[in-house]
Amino acid sequence: MKNIIVIGGDRRMIFAAKRLAEKNDCSLCGFGDMNVPGMSGAGSGERFDCAVLPIFARSEEIPCPMGGQPLDIDMLTGLLEPGAAVFAGKVFPRLAELCVKNGYELYDYLEREEFAVMNAVLTAEAAAETAIRETQTSVFGADVLVLGYGRIGKLTARYFAALGARVTAAARKQSDLAWIRASGHSCADITDRAQLGEALAAADIILNTVPAKILAGETASFVRTDALLIELASVPCTDETAAFRVIKAGGLPGKTAPVTAGYIIAETIENIMDERRKQNGGA
View 1 (cartoon, one colour):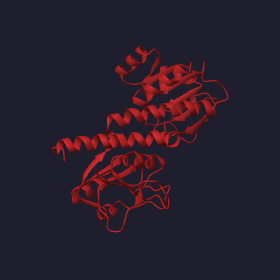
View 2: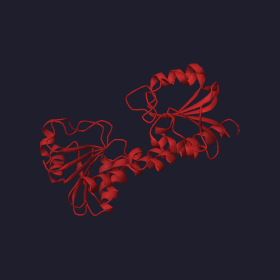
View 3: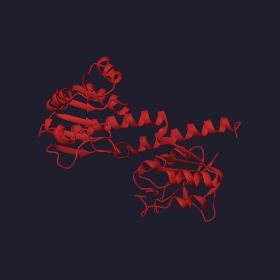
View 4: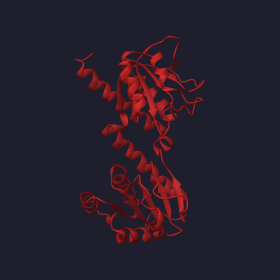
């Protein structure tokens, strides 16, 4: 059993803490006066074996949207035992340097395949819900274009096809284009302006998973003004001058399924801790 402190983040981190508390002692920090059964705040002078941090975006401070102002990562040195483990989403250099300096073991749960796959499932599901809510026509029979065919692209294409949409997926790798065809979708080569333009012009709904401005400038002119773009990537694919409707839908799992999203984070951390115990001879 570990003594874990979960610091900051949105609702999914509370559910991650609840899951971790089933087998460990778990405390919360950065959630204001929120009362969560079975958990307490960090006591004065208390030290922990593990710290669980949320997914970092652009800031290098620990986001605390449910508990006020962000927290500086230097606070970890006053909370952790020597040799403690730190789990975070999207590790950045200053956090890595702090952990090396203080002898903490640092793990980025965003880099784990099991997290990435299950998070992609929640994103695809939420993208379908967003499309249904934000359009006045049925997804069934709609022309849907998925930009990118990574984990999220694959699952998003599958979800919309299951809803009866006519799905086209666009990618640049020949291997991805082959998988798109093998999955029964129409395909378009993102690097082929004519192919991409034709796919954009036909689309009622566009779902972008590519973190690059592939629809900026002249390429955006292919998109119909009545089309809907749902932006799933961390970097938008178009700019503010777009003549069509754009919904910025980053971080959907934490908004639409915080319980499951939190459990996925906790399960990933539990997997890492199990591997860590085995590497340390079961300790």
